[in-house]
Length: 414
Image (tube, rainbow, N blue to C red; front, side, top):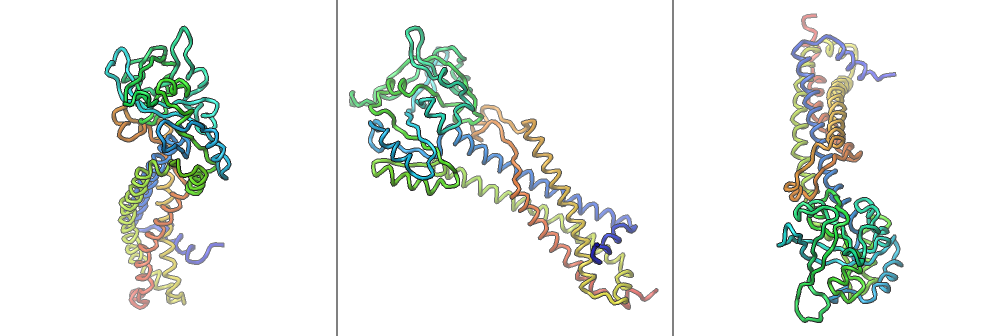
C-alpha cells in the first residue's frame, strides 16, 4: 500500500496541470537526464582509459620487476628467483633481458629507437599475457639457424616506421654491455621479422622488439643470464605490501619497482582529471535542478487550493512538505533513471563500434589507439547519490513554502 504523500504526489502528476507547468516539468526531467548522461559517459571514458592503460602496462610486463644494481645483470638469477618466489603473494617469476637500442632496415638505414626484450616464452607466459599479442611465441622468437637469422616480433607501428613486413630482415644495434672494450661500442646483428604484433598501446607498438633471451644476451654481451626478474602477483590489490616484501627478500644489491611506481605520475594525473571532470559536469546536474525548483513552485501556486483543503482537514504541515518532496523526487528520479540508461547506451555503442579510435600520431599522445568506455557500478552509485542530494536540496525550499500556505488565503474564494 502506497503512503499518503506518494499517493497525493502521484495524483498531482496525473491531474491536468497548466501547459506551462507541464513544459517546465518536462524541461526539468530532460535537463537532469542530460546532465546525468554526460556524467556517466565522462566517468566511463576516464575509467576505461585508465583501465586500458593499466591492462596494457601489466599485460606486456609483470606487476613487479627486480633488477640488480651492478652493471651487466645478475650472473646467478636463479638464486634471486628462489628468494622472490618464496615471498607470500608472488605467483610466478621470469628472468628477462632489457636493452635499449636502434632498429634499422634497408628502407630506413638511419634506424629508429627501439626497446629490446629478451624472453624465454615458457617462463614469460607465466608472468604476462604473452599469448594475447604473441601467439605461438616459441615459433616466433627463435634462435639463429644456418639458413636464417634469429626471429623477432616487432610492434605494428615500428614495422610501419621501418617499412618492413613479416619475413623481412632488420638490423638491431645495442651498446656493448660486456665491458671488454671499456667503452660504449655498438654491437649489431641481423634478425628476421617473424611476427608483427599490435597491443593497441602506443609505446609498445612503436618501439618494442621481442626476441630470444639468449640471442639478445649474445648480441649485447651481457655477462649475466638476465638483467631483470619479472614478478607476477596473485593480486594487484596487494602490490604495495608484496613489493616491499620482495625488496627485503632480494637484498640491498637490488632495486624493486612495481607498475604503480613506474607510472605513478600518469595514474595520479588521471585520477585528478576524473575528479575534476566529475565536479565540472556535476554542475550541469546542479543547474538542472533549478528547473525542479521552478516546476514545484508553480505546482504549489496551482495547487494552493488543494493544499488549503488538506490543511483544513487536519493535515500536518509535515505531510504537505513530504508531498512536495516526493513530487520533486519523482521528477528528479525520472531524469536520473533516464540519464543513466541513456549514458550506459552511449558507452556501449562507443565501445561496441570502437568509435573513439586514434590514428598513429594521436595514439602516441594518448598512449593507446582505442579507448573503451567502462561503466562501473560504483561510478553509477556515486552519480545517483550526488544527484539525489542535489534534487532533495532543490525540492526542499518549494516543499517548505507549500507547508507555509495560509489556509484562509487558499480558501478565501471557496
